[in-house]
Image 1 (cartoon, helix red, strand yellow):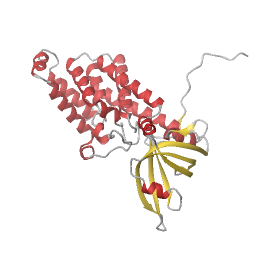
Image 2 (image 1 turned 90 degrees about the vertical axis):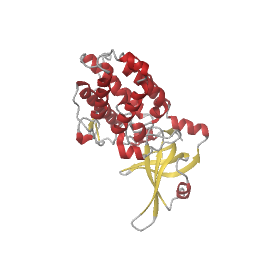
Image 3 (image 1 turned 180 degrees about the vertical axis):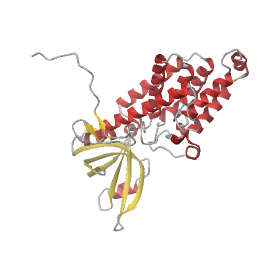
Image 4 (image 1 turned 180 degrees about the horizontal axis):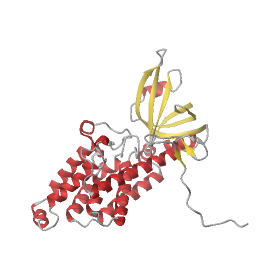
Length: 347
């Protein structure tokens, strides 16, 4: 039986009605519910490093007792005949076996493709940070990456809409930073050092709002994440880091730099506060500087393009070139126009 990731299974089921497949997963959530007739069933979340699927397990099925008794965060190889239904994938002929420690470690770190992508994105982040010339922003970025690397590289960028997976925050941050750097090429009057620093730190509060424990694939809910949210947390993190790097020696060195250090800090905080673009989308203030507008659009563009990528992979086809809408995109998704090919077949 062929092995799949969660996402590759979902993609395959958009192209064929059923297939036999094995997936290495962690049981990240389960809830006992009741049918209209009062019979219990399980709603189980099966997750790997790339995504999750929800399956319903009826009490009459032979694998119900094993899943019912399984502890959360248990790791299994799930083998089944999978069918696509209007309510999502449905397994039959299901069997479970515990993963070995090595299999579990591989499952936690994701596919070779995902690991390679996230490593390249991490390297892009560190490289772009190394190009920041303002010593205050450069020191801040370096200190952030040193102190929070593990937590940063595990966190997701969202809970459902985009980059909603372990390590997704690194992918999203790299995309926003690359876009910010390109915008600075197109609009040279933008403060590149400020914008790159804002791009690195705009979502740093998601390390608590959308974080993962070291060996878990369930995105944790925390009091601080729920009660404050990532924008407020991001401002707090940056202020704390800023205070830690403003040593007496550095303050003396930075006194001669224009613009003044306090003004640099304030503009950076504004980027974090305004990056959602408007009050209705969660920003306490709208963008009021060129860099704030640039960051808002870079952030939104990277998120939207990731949503479309996900739609192309997992949304059901409505026709040969149209796929079903994937929330929160505004409509069905059309296949992009391929790039022009310069090769021609011989007549």
